[in-house]
Image (tube, rainbow, N blue to C red; front, side):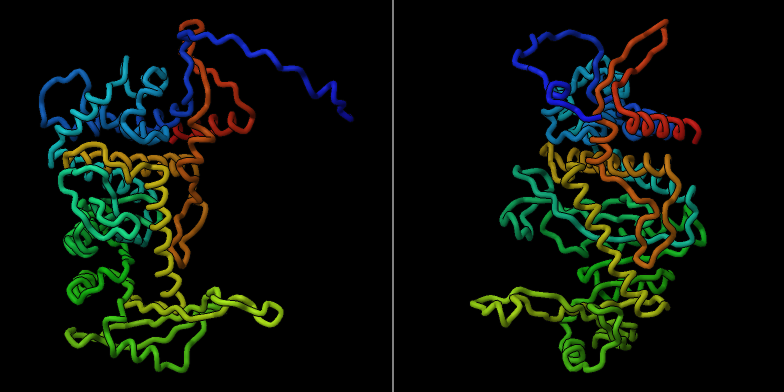
Length: 457
């Protein structure tokens, strides 16, 4: 059928009259899916247990305040003052079990009351949620990635310090060390530190603690670890060997003239593909006791030429080599070692999502433990968004060479647009609480699928 202009277009010159009324309208109807997930995980009760030792009977339960911060991040808001934009939303209030949301002063006061015991309880809760998922998955291998991420602050927050920050020099910051699980794309644990420490500060004890937690939950599982050159040391390599952990660690080879000379003088390289080549050697720094397996990797990359060019004779790009050295105790082929170590890039994607969509780089208060609690709230929000997708869908891929996540996850911003940010209305027809949404068939299918599988799980 051919459409005419008369059938398609209409006049719309008059603005409608604006009217406000309390009709139980919600802008975040999709938070219902997270309410079902929280109920299944007993999240509200587990959060309250972290604050039980503080005592007192405040009007706003401290566990509910932290749950409110998790919801705050899931909804896509950043600063605490932005809670005013949804303080009357009926779906958010029902999820939290409140008649009214706390104001900014109440939330800030609750964060300042947090102590080290609360932080340890929240860290344990984070580990337990990931552990429960691994118990359901039962993998034969668990791959842990360790790296730090700068968390800048514009205020003089307790425990922060001026450290290396190439974007904002002189800014005070924290520098937490995070452990992520490659198979689930979740953060397993975090070690909070000031911003003026090296990557390896406190890393050895933190790494051993994470390994111990994984092995207690999954006896017999093979633990694999990937790290960058900041963690390269004889002590850490020896400890990982003693514990039977498989690892790949980048080597800062420019610090070792002998190793650098071998790479520069090497003539024969074995090809992995058109861009990557390698050679293998048994070597050790002079201060080490044992030799180890090292892989020197050479990657071809294009760089833009500078200066005037005659474009009809020359392409304005040149090729050069980028070198990398990896130490490992894995017994697999060099090609597979290269692919395995390059899989570390997935952790950078997690950091990017945590900062851009999970508000991990926001520092809300001046107290150290309060900022640690907010950091853990952002991490829990990220893990719960991944858990929601894993509860609903089966694994979509097997273990790959790069140890990519077993699920093809949607980013938190995508979940907000698709599911959470949906208008709805709460009514009580014939005494039955009903949420009415005006959505298309695609969104309707997603809602029915998510709720059905969460109830059946």
